[in-house]
Length: 394
Image (cartoon, rainbow, N blue to C red):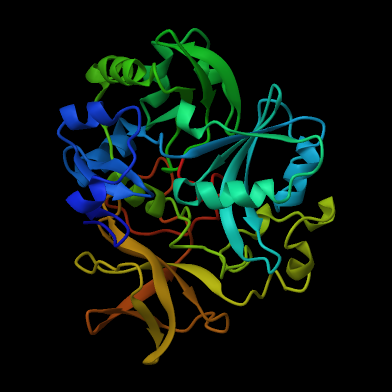
């Protein structure tokens, strides 16, 4: 069990959960299945550590078919999207993507999205747990001449991540996938399956996402595993995905942000484009100081045997000043790490985390904890914010 949001094997929940097109493949691989965002999903196939290390050093293959895919098209599609998102898609070229948050009128974060400008409009990838809420929000704010299509149930999403990922896909692709730039996408064939191929990522490693139809997805999964057999590719579950994205300092909706959090407080002010014109939440955001938000989102490093968890209290001088949003053991660094919200005035004050009644020193470190190319076991170093892919769980 790696965090409160992922529970191993709960039969009463599993019987009610939806299944992805790759469900049979997970069972045949003896994956430990859990209920997550209304779906029965693989937590792990071997061990979370083995799958984590595979992604950092070789490659891992993830089933992300629980994510939502929504298409906006028509003459009003861009105006609708601009009304919904805090970022600016007006100059986004076809074939490129951006990361964004969407806010309510009070600038609380409803969800975070990846948005692609595609051939006939926009493809929006939403978090699985927010799919229905997002669809209702989008439909209630559509401008005229905008068509909204929910393609989630007909779409499978496979992600292959790690140093060997591009090379593995290239052996099966009909185009040069290495030429695809970060946060870009193109339509091509992989193992004979038509896919939208993108390069966004959520692990801190390079890699690709393959969007395809639900029916051919199992065959594509098999082909990728076969192509990666000699390169150390492992199927990887939600457990490794969570430890990888935490090391990379990437947010998870529902833990690191929700409708009670504004983009500035969670370190996502770089996604806000107030100069683009009006959008939902802009009026309230203009009242906030981006450099002095209501809360501060920080990275914390603990000792090798000190494993912080979501919801644990952060203290300064014995006083509760915040709480852990995400936490766990860093397999790449060899010690506990966490993200947390703390009061903004605690710029350099010593912090502790309450681990089952023990006040454990927590050293504030810049995010991300891990950056691609670092060797395992090195002590935390100062890194600039990545400014890359955000907290969506594609």
